[in-house]
Image (cartoon, rainbow over all chains, first blue to last red; front, side):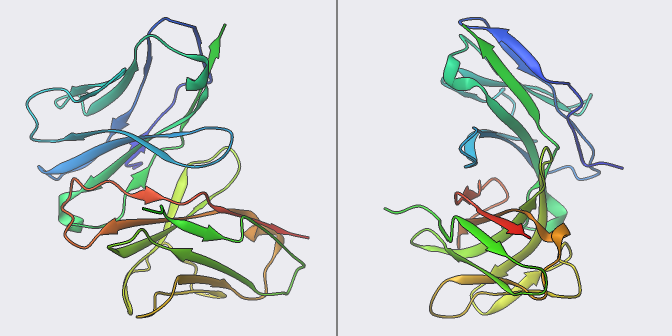
Amino acid sequence: AQKITQTQPGMFVQEKEAVTLDCTYDTSDQSYGLFWYKQPSSGEMIFLIYQGSYDEQNATEGRYSLNFQKARKSANLVISASQLGDSAMYFCAMREDHTGANSKLTFGKGITLSVRP
Amino acid sequence: NAGVMQNPRHLVRRRGQEARLRCSPMKGHSHVYWYRQLPEEGLKFMVYLQKENIIDESGMPKERFSAEFPKEGPSILRIQQVVRGDSAAYFCASSPSSAGTNEKLFFGSGTQLSVL
């Protein structure tokens, strides 16, 4: 089974509006971490936000927030007040506790977001 | 504080040649990861190294691919006798030595390998 699933087709959002990018995950660990990265057309991978499995509050970082629903194993990224510079690929990733600290992140296939002016 | 440095940014090789990709982690980071990204795909884990040790190479092909992270100098991902299917973006990432499971990876800008 895929560890990280991102199935949305290319997403479009109007500038200044909010958008939700979906991510579901699969793990039997109780302790794990979820990450979102942004990859603009220039190619670099930019860290956006992190959510720990034991965190009681949904993570927020500026215009980014994570809608964490543990029972559903979903960790959707919400971008508020979209900007043209948000147009990029967005990747969800997970680190599982059983693989140990400093272990690899497993990435989903990504979602393309295009912000319309 | 410089970020993760990868070079070259672009590398063109003919089939059968060798490709050497370099990665210098962020200052203070002793953990290095290599990922491969095919067009329109996510990042696929290849190998995780600490200084002078390969910790996890479960994602790396058994043949033609090797990686090292010597005591001094950058980490090297080496692909021998390249084939067209090796064409991809190769990303290096690093993390601090004292990191926990919540530690994010810091990525370089990647090396785009094109095999003619």
